[in-house]
Length: 205
Image (cartoon, rainbow, N blue to C red):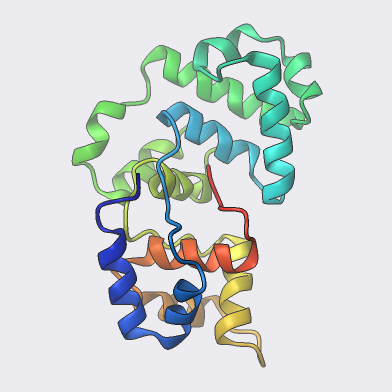
């Protein structure tokens, strides 16, 4: 089920930006969709850190085969050597195990998030080992479906912006950030379409 704001956001982005309009028009009948429970989304985001979408999916598929349903309890009960055998680095094994323990201990306050702003949720999430701002932003986009997240540290987003908006010169992060402001309050939607312009497989966490 697509977010309730999706069509409204598409229209607004297309009206204000002919480049974005073409990207959206080339990809009809697709949209962002929520993926699973909070733990599942965060675990997928950790798996996807600093590797390609294809590689991340391959590792995730092996992890699911190894532990079955990916839950805090199933991760905690799985030996770390088996998690490493799925293709996870030692550090990512530590991060996912720590995330699982935070959920099992009740240290993550999922019930409060609907009333919290984006930056407050990011501040809570980055207290967990292995969750930096990028991972927290992926969570806001893919699980909470927040409409105006702009994860400018994401290399794929930077690549797509350069490709479509600055093909003759390399823009600074400040220039890209200024461009992103023109897409507010729908920067999550703009980001998602920019990702899709690079890869026909939907970006999902």
